[in-house]
Length: 266
Image 1: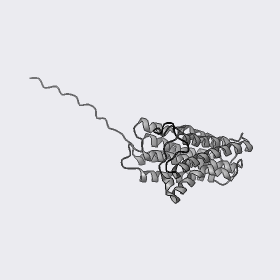
Image 2: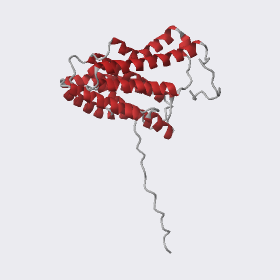
Image 3: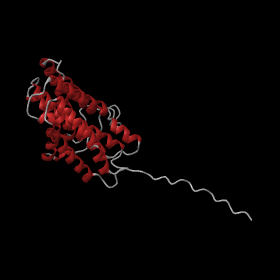
Image 4: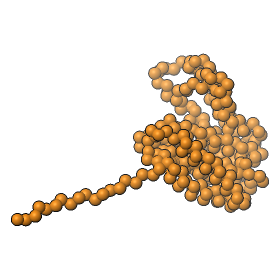
């Protein structure tokens, strides 16, 4: 009597999934690398790495504390990982804005390169947002994370451009208007209403970043940097004015829509 043949068991496949804290810890490697390179390019002591490291630790702690339990994983999710990767560029880029001393032409070229990479990664519609949509991991948390990082990048770039002397202190409004709008919402609750999606905001936000990066380039004369930054600021003021009016009027548009059901058309 022959023994029954045993069916071989399929190999055990162990799923490996990262944790949110693991994603944050992994981001320390590129952050330190970019920060050290920035210190070298700007002829700053390596101790200035702490100017990027401390905000990153605070950012990581905030992400872990505010990450919703129902957030689609694994870890922070693909889209948020990409946003965190952009943060490892933005924070070392922002650190020189608050460093003492003068940045040389070579240093500004390095900042231009970092800024350009951060803007390309974000792109017009947000590379991290597209990744989240394709992987089915979109969330309000991820959208807010992306928006706050974009806003902070504009603050850093506007401070850097102001420090070059190519534009007056008014250029700080490019980075500060969004926070003034948030403060206005605290004082006037109507401004905390939900705004419909508009392509206008994405385009004008992208214009701000591009203009500030171009203005930082050593080959751009102060007069040209002043003109393009002023035009960009006018666009930004217009965008905020439209949104403020819309919220103040209770959701009534400044101009009638051809298709009222399509809030994404404008």
